[in-house]
Length: 294
Image (tube, rainbow, N blue to C red; front, side, top):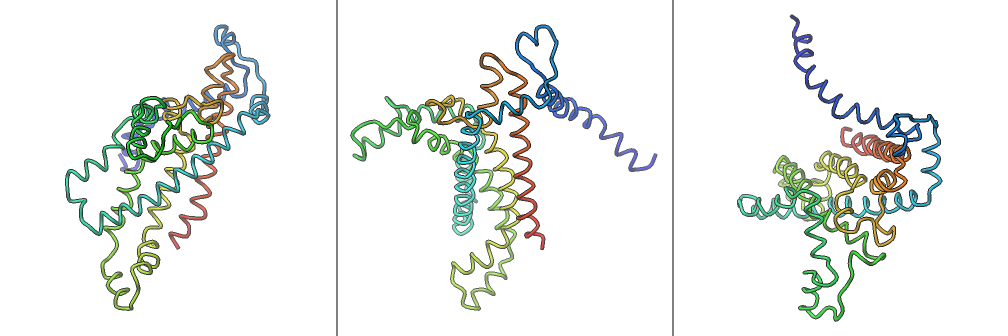
């Protein structure tokens, strides 16, 4: 048997598993998005075809546009902060050599090992208005005389959710940037130093260009995941106060599983979210990764 055909047959079980686990739910969700599907229709098993009606209702819903705006703000704050912090921390680790310490590795990687819902619950206690550790620290330091309702104030709730998310996902970016730094030839820095380049110019003209490929990877992956954030919202604010922390994924969830349980409209909103994530990834690959490969 030719090697190519043998390799294909060896991968058939994996392909079938991916079809069952990934492709079929997506296809079925697409089917639901163009039908009228509620609890009554689910009981009868009869779904009336509505065409693009569900998509039109999503675009006409002010809550959707508010959730999309919150999603864009959340994504920009988390991704930009994570990228900057990852580069700074990775450079610090690379310069000091503290990565060789097992304790340091454990502490840096610990947040990434915590399940998202557990991370949200931990930070909900930290943010607690009555007995939260954050307010207690502020009291102790004399920075405030009254407790701050971090997750219950519409002006601060969305930004309060970004902190736990950044804390949980930051180790992923640190690992990638640190690995990329290890691959930069030392001769480049030595040549720049001989030419009289300052530390900032060595970073700007040597380090940053060599990190462009890994920065592109971080931007694509972290933007996709941040755009679909759900667990921290569920554990900390449940979309509140009001609709201050409604994001796109939370909107799809509430439309689908809250009365009147519009599964068709929820599937349509989820498809819109998926298309937006795909479009953003294509933009990154087009304008960032292409420059990296030039």
